[in-house]
Image (cartoon, rainbow, N blue to C red; front, side, top):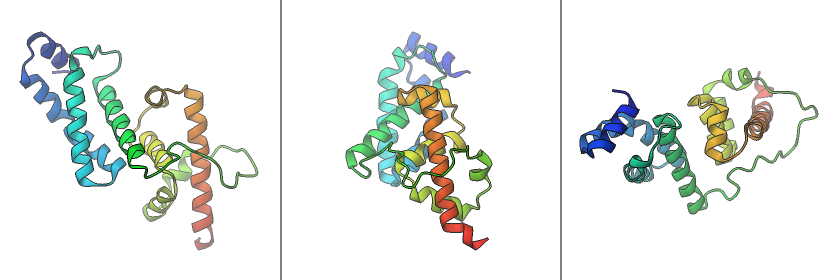
Length: 183
């Protein structure tokens, strides 16, 4: 069954089985995303439970304007961001200030990130803010479209594209500063 069929069956009959099917289908993905963002197993487990509580309470209002998976991803992302903000791990969550802007405003190709060695990429990601890291992972690891990211963040697509461009430039500078002399 498709997700929307299950949602409609839930609305019609309020069977817990319908919710259980959706839970089984998405719990692993939600937990994985929460763990990636929150970095602690216990926090990810708590977040997963909270997320599915929100999904359960809102399931009757889901109208299918987006894919169900996108809707669940949005709830997951927003709840995790709220938890990060509350824990004050990073005050400037979505700051993409450039410490030392590049001389040229040339586009950093995606391949510059995709061809980094794993240890190099880990280092670069560790040097980015939580918000910068999350945006890159959403785009390149999770394959979330720019339009979906813009909708999640309440921004327009061009703002998200510019933010991604700046983050890629910053990531390339971090990489080059650390690893350029090693090659």
